[in-house]
Image (cartoon, rainbow, N blue to C red):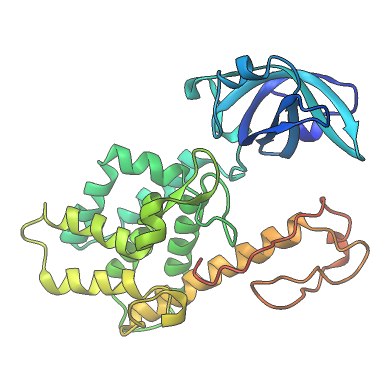
Length: 333
C-alpha cells in the first residue's frame, strides 16, 4: 500500500514508492560520502539520505526514476527526513501515476465522452471529419486525457487539459446563443482544439514542466503543426474554413504580450479568447484559494500573477495547508 509523504511521522518505518526529484553526493564532516535525495509524491516532498552502501545503492537508480524506498523517518533541524536503508528503481508499469501528481477530481473518461458528444453536434461535415481524425489518433487521445493545462497557473493536474477544454466548450454552448452571426460549428471545433499543442508543450511524466520543444516553440505553434498534419489528410477541406480555424487557434491568447501571434479578428475568435481567459482565470483563483490559508484573515495571501489579494468568504477561512504560487508566468493561459 502506498504511503504518502504527508502521512509520515517521526520514527515511522517507511516502505513505499516515490519519485526522485533530486539526487546528489555530499560529504560528512568526517569526509565520508552520503547520498542526498529529494523524494516526492502528490502530497509533497521530503529529503532522504543514504548513509551506508552509498555507491552500491546509488547505482540502482537515477534522478527522475520511480523508486522503492525503505527507511526510518527522523527529525533533523525541525524537519522530517528519511534515513534510507534501501532504494531501488521500479518500472513505470508498477506505478499508479495519480499517486505522484495531483489529478482532477472529475472522471476523465466521463469528461472525454462528454466532449466527444458535444463535437458530434457539429453539422459541418469537414469539421466533423477533422475531429474524428483526432479522436482516432490513440496516441494523441492518451496524452490529451492525461496532460495538465499549465504548469502553475490553472488546471495544474492530471486531466487538467481535458477538464479545461470541456469547460470552455460548455461555456461556448451556453453563451453563443446570446449573440447573432456566430459560426457555432467553428466555435465548437476551435474550443476543442485550441490547446491541443499542450500535449507536446508540457511534460508531466516526471514533473509538471515544459518539454524542450514546448520552450522553443510553444503550444500555439505545436498545435498548428498537429492541425496541419490532420488537414493534409483531408484533401477537400475548405481553404477558407481552415484559415478561420487556424486564426482561432493562434489568436486565443488575445494579446501579443500574452504570446498571441495575432489578436482576435473574427467574432468567433473574440468569444473564444474571452471565454478561454475566463475559464483559466476562474480555475486559477479557485486553486489558489483552495490551497492556501489566510490564517484567519478575510483576505488571501498576495497572488503574484494577478498582482492582488482576494477576499475569502468566511466558510473558506478554515481550509487546507499553505501552498503559495511563487512564480509569475504571463504566458500561461
